[in-house]
Image 1 (cartoon, rainbow, N blue to C red):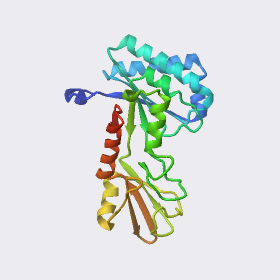
Image 2 (image 1 turned 180 degrees about the horizontal axis):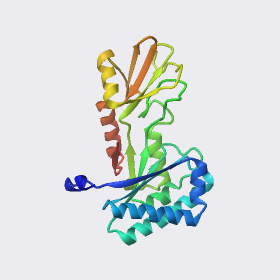
Image 3 (image 1 turned 180 degrees about the vertical axis):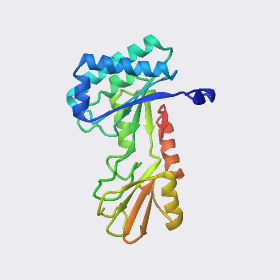
Length: 247
């Protein structure tokens, strides 16, 4: 924290809780909520950090209102003890079950970090872009427009999170979006670049993504966002007057 502060960089504590059962246990209990808030605040103060980021995933629909109450209480507690604390949340690319009250959460927090990735993921039936901008019904454009609509135009609270990683699937053949024969493996940006340098790559203009078909013992297909792909998505965030981007 000191190292970051010496360089003008602020630090948040990221608190994660995944799964509908765990989230229901926490959010159904005012006592558990208060304990969590107290513990998080104590840790942030102890470390002289600047705020907190709440990463709750697989939120059940019946906890929609309780999450808003939790964030209101958390914001109140942090603002009572700190000067200008940063409070953000990691939020889904697609709210499949209408569990998230984006408008209320945007009003409470300093930013909603959209996890704008895993549109294609390790378990997808076909290889494809992790973070497509175009080319698919569900893509970055759909997501950002959904947030703008559901937050009632709170552009300054929307952060577009982008993937500095890709997936590498075993596939049937060298055709684009070939059928996956097993789970894809995550590849860091650097390792995906090495694959690209060794085998060459293809630019998929419809989704603004890079894909690499290559053969080891069998066909593989790696998709990731290179510097051009990412720059197009940064530009999209700027064109939409979002708060910014995240990695």
